[in-house]
Length: 377
Ligand code: NAD
Ligand code: MG
Image (cartoon, rainbow, N blue to C red; front, side, top):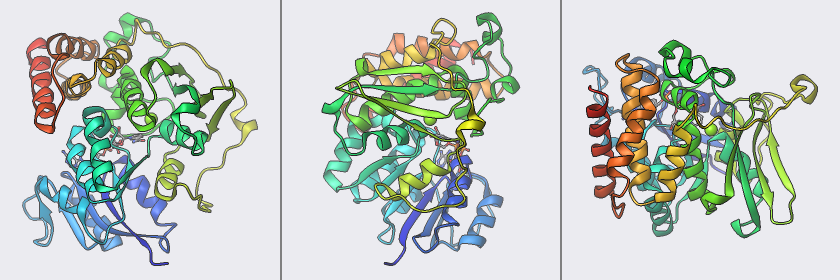
């Protein structure tokens, strides 16, 4: 069998570089045909030299990129539709990944989706694009990979409840007042996962779990009343499915994205891979679970309420979060202001209709503006 063509969108990021590590062990099975990055031309250059893809795109930055490289956001759509590509691994961060997800699905590709914001902002449009084009989304997010594996092909009708686990982030045990004043350095110091800056802050606020609840709703067709979140500080149990008869299946592994990335590429097949970190129950020793402290981490409930409201509310939540996190990372607002900004944006715009892409980008833009106004930036 010839290797399957892979387009790696966001090759220079945390997921992108981890994916290349996984792909390097499966060269007979997958060939990297396209790579895209936002602005890190130096790393992209190294990756291109090592992987020799046919198609390379650098969305912004660095004027002296090779002439053969595509430039601008439209190049992401081109990469997603290439005829010699079977799998699009979308490892872009933020709502900027949505258009490429839609383009890939409309072109009938498998989308190995790390870019959870695609489903949060445009879940209904993503479903429709997959139906129209014959594409399919397979999650990379470890929680959703766990759920997919536990489901084993069973439908939502057999599911009583999904239980998504959360590490609790670096502030799990901090008192509320200390959390509100946490520094950028504190927020980037994640106890169990090493990831890009934006998702690391989302893990500290628990906004990431809200994104994941909405993602699970769209991926698995399960209602919000049937999705729970529990804190599991060791990040070994990646999530659980409770079936209608009360049986609960969980998927376990060390906190590494290599297995979820590999599984998103190979599902439903399982590939031999001696490079995947091995799980040792005795080394893990203790697995504990505790409730979410919603008063200290309001972003989770804000996001879930946006999911329930539907329409453009999840896009408002996501846009507000992206803007507030960017301001926090620039050192312009306090950690606690992230939730304040999101809350203000949802108060103003949660009723917006979702309908089409234009409506969703409008919701995203007004949410970002409201956050800047509310936080005085
Ligand atoms: P990252 O910041 O490390 O990398 C992001 C990548 O996207 C980079 O290659 C960057 O060049 C590219 N990019 C950024 N903005 C872009 C834009 N506007 N247009 C095109 N490309 C752009 O992020 P990450 O941690 O790798 O996360 C990527 C996605 O995967 C996010 O949606 C995140 O929530 C999700 N995810 C990440 C992890 C993890 O372990 N890092 C786990 C689960 C899910
Ligand atoms: Mg996750």
